Image (cartoon, rainbow, N blue to C red):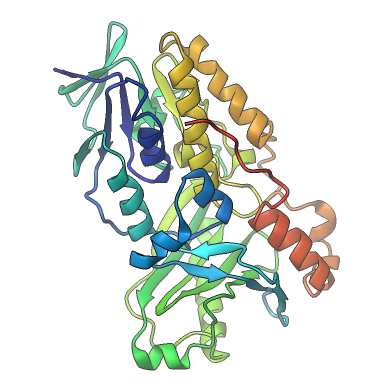
Length: 374
């Protein structure tokens, strides 16, 4: 049996950031992922400068070898009415390809890795966990996304009543002809809200790569909403008429709607496994990175792997992201006054789409950077 002080299950931004943040802690860390990297990852794919700073990634250096699309504007609308375009006058975010970004973060951490290995068994033996009858550890960290096997160890496992957001999207490299015909601009992502405000769609160009998708809370109607949106974008010339392949799906939890405990004896959840996606936008990368950095600080300070010692992590998450509201019937946590006919008027407002939708909901410019010593 191979012993590790910490085993991290999941090699996305949350898991790789935690492993990276623990490198000089004196702890022996193993990172396990069922896939080999680089791998496809369904995600619109943008990160703010704050995330790059937290990860200590120099955008200029990263952009020399990877896709990095500066974002200065947003085009926002309610489906069925003209959009509003806001120019922020500076780079407020970056478009990335998750297959590249996740591979980069994973490659830079020097911990032991077991890639292409699924978790087949998890057993409690004394004070430790044994995974796949191969590795033993007092602390296992779930970083494997919404369906992370480690989440099943906490409480009753993922709740049946959790309000899950389902999304479908496609990302592909356009041919020269498609790129010429595509009216979407690289520095101006397009966000289109559904009329009932239970989700939104996007068109996001990153150089010659195009990402199109839609996410909603009522996934039984997802395909219909997506098809209507794609047809509208094709008819208006915003996207090429000859889209390749099929749309891939994924699911995640919004922070205010998640019911999952974050810690127990020898167990801790981070990122999407913990259900930390921002409630208004569904963004998961910044919460994943920040939860990993907060977890690393707690793991470094903890005297053991008991729930009592790890509870500081739960407290840190609540302090950073707020106390979960658990309003399962409130859709995307949109205020009731915005769900009235006033919504159409507000979505035509440059002030509202800039100050509320873009800067508050999507960029979280009101949230200060996470100051964490690594």
